Image (cartoon, rainbow, N blue to C red; front, top):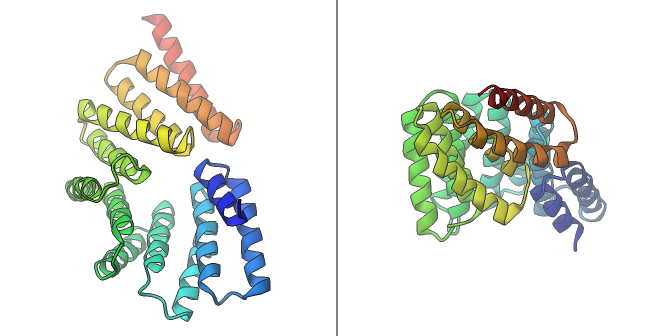
Length: 265
């Protein structure tokens, strides 16, 4: 397996330290052989930024996303499919950093670009999903729901049924239902997203987050036994990925709290 493929494997399965190390090795090899001013370099540092963002480090992610963006500009490839990928990735890191205006600007730029590029279905839906996430975080739920439902129709129409990107849109729509206090509507959406994620990516971070989300919804519905079941699944996933870090510890505390409530029933 090539080093870049190995890095992608590590990232997909939430082995972020290994992914970052591998991407840096690929980056350094490219610099030694062909230099920085190549599309391979831009793609690699974009992937490196993605690993940092998924690990929860948007500041370092943005450093590499901006490096990738400038490289594509220098190559006069700012109309390329991968340039839209960089814009989408930048938007997520900006969103994680609380820069909502900057995130929206990058997303609208990506969507506008993709309208003129053939074979860009994946990035169009990624932009839609990211834009809907932004709308959720800025309390524009009606706009978020409309664009998420549109993305799900688009995915089914273009053959992405059962793919991780569909799980992302389902998770988002379920989250919107949660914010709207439509808990019964959220549960089957989260469950379908969880099924897709587990089948395609195993027990990675997205799997753990989805289990957490289901646990919260079941708790709000007063179904504590179901809530406890999904918290335990999230705990196992996070323990395997992160060890006993702050996030995993919070899940353990929630398990203890619900277990005590069940004992008192």
